[in-house]
Image (cartoon, rainbow, N blue to C red; front, side, top):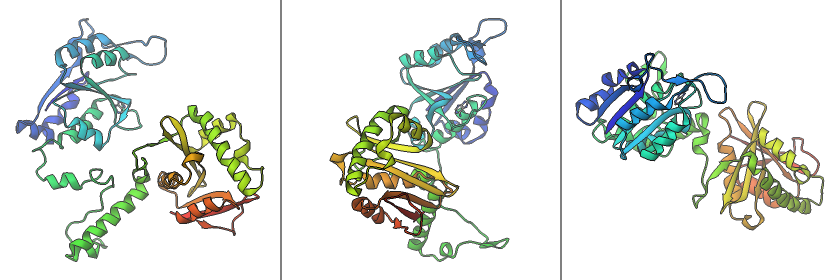
Length: 383
Ligand code: ADE
């Protein structure tokens, strides 16, 4: 694999020679090139930025130096990685994908970003990925390029000494975080190594590690446990403001059934307007499922206090009721609850037998001791 870096701070990349990527270069697995963008400027001040069209704060990187850099570095076999906070999130899957490429060129922006035409132009010449390290803003893309490099390069065949450690680590298998690890001595400053790890029973060790991995993941990254796709691969995705109209239609269809089952019309979900739906979309973490373009399922959740996750508006299109979609949506909304959540709460019609049955099967219990709106019952579950 060949890796090129274009930046106005080429010194950022000296760690490449020191660290594991440097060793891979020594072994001939990798070749690096670090390039100062200013070498492709032609004015006395070696200018790489200018004021933004349309006004606004900050400076934008000019297209011309980037164009000349790309003329020299890009081929049809290149993947250009623009590091930017507005890119797709970097994760282990993307590292695995990038590790299959022959040639990566990291384009490290500074200031308010790079003139959009540079990205559009690169797309005409090579594969382009705009990649973000996370939901925060760095001063430039160099640190992100180094982090991506380290995650990608260690996946190259022949790079890691022990291939098993690649398979066992966090995010690589089953989407779980790694279990806690211990080494000698068996007791240290009053802390003991868990006895099971010293039992010599490999089956028990494996079961303990799996349980710890699941527990950690549930506590720290519940989103990783969420069933984010249905059995047929249909994704469950976050609702957008544009979903409000279809949500209102689906909601009315579902709550007319509720009104009939409970013999009452005084149900808030039945009376909401489009503006009401738009408003709650801004306040709740709402997820939807589309089949062949049609919105067929939804669910929402939000924090009530610090530790309770309020679940509601589980809706399934009439023709898909009974298909298991409601159960999956319920599992999903529990799994995406923030880490500090210790219990779930939801309401349903006192006479909605089918709903209550589904909630009970999912581990919810009827709570007659808690207040509920007229005609409704409240159910809770501990996380
Ligand atoms: N440049 C500035 N912030 C960044 C981020 N979060 N990820 C990638 N590149 C960046």
